[in-house]
Structure formats: C-alpha cells, structure tokens
Length: 248
Image (tube, rainbow, N blue to C red; front, side, top):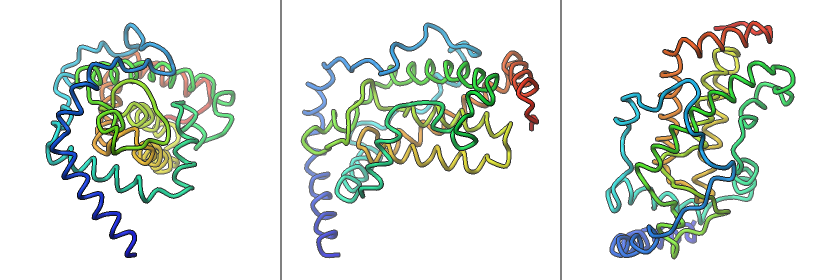
C-alpha cells in the first residue's frame, strides 16, 4: 500500500512537471510524420455516408494541450503504466490489431463464414468508420501519449497516425451497434467487449482516456447517421434475410 501511494505521489509530481515543458515537447514532435496505419491508407471515399455531414464538423475537438482534461489524461495514463497487470498487458496485446472479428467473435468465432452477408455489410460500414475517423483525426492532430510525452509514457507497443479519437473505439462501437440490431440478446455483451478493447488501448499507453471516450461517442454517432441512409437500411435487411437473422 505504501509503495502504491509513493508511486501515485511520484506520478502527481511528474504530471506537475510535465505541464511546464509540455509545449516544449510538442514542437519537435509535431514535425514528425506519423506512420501509416497498418491496414494501409484510408479509403478515398466513405461507403454509405458522404463525409460532408454537419455532425463531423461539429464533433468536439481534442482537449487543449495543458488543459485540465489533458492533464487528467496524462495522470490516468501514468497511473495505469505503474499499475497494469500481466493480464491487462496480455489483453492489450491480443486486441492490438484492429479487426471486425474482435466483436463478431462475441457472437460466433466462425461469424464470417456462418453469416457472410452480414459480415460483408459490417465491412462496408467499417469503410465509413475508417474514413470519418481518419478525417477527424487529421483535423485534430493530437499526438499519441508516448509521442507527446516521450520521457514519461512507455507504451506496450507503438502505432501510427494520430490519437484523437480512437479508431478501435469508434469502429468497433459502430460494429457492436449494428450487431445489436441482429442479435439483441447479445447487445450488452458486445458493448462490454468494445469497452474492454477501448480500455486496453489506454492501458497500452497508445491512447488517452478522452481519445477512447470520444471514439465510443463517434461510433454511436456513425450508427445514428447510417440509420438515416436508405441504402444502408436496404443492405441490412437484405443481409439479415439472406443469413436468416431476425432484424430488431
């Protein structure tokens, strides 16, 4: 208990010190060109959406550097860094690479072959998620925790691109919302799994808490926008019919 208290006090001191040199850290790091996403370049255009919907322009911006939210983000990151367990580390590594299967496995490990039409629908919707998330990330340009604070944050692994909002959180939240329409009894389990994955990104030191919270909110917003699209509703109904799934 005494060791844990000392660790927290140390973190508080580091956060206080980091606020004084955060701007100094930012300048050289922003000149870096973030690495490309492991899955390649974002699509040239979304699938069902247009990318010009007003909701994207009105999406909340990243926390300002040195703001109370930004400082709290760093405190949480550093606290997790000294307290993360082996189980938490292993979970973060298992969920490191983005895949729709991270959530479809909640339904069935063979989901892609058992429900091929639905999986295709999810893949198309994922194009929208990737496109919109990348667009918002570029507009905000928030650096990853370990890039912004290289002397403080030690990540479990490194990833490319910007940090806000989390692509894992937004993309998989969208998938969970769509699947919840087809598997309503599994809806809570799907959303719980997405939260677990999102939390793992913070544990890994590759996202701040506000990144993942914004990602989850973006996923919900993406789903709300897709629900207004006739083509999406048409494809959802067709996929459910072909895969013999009841539509909520």
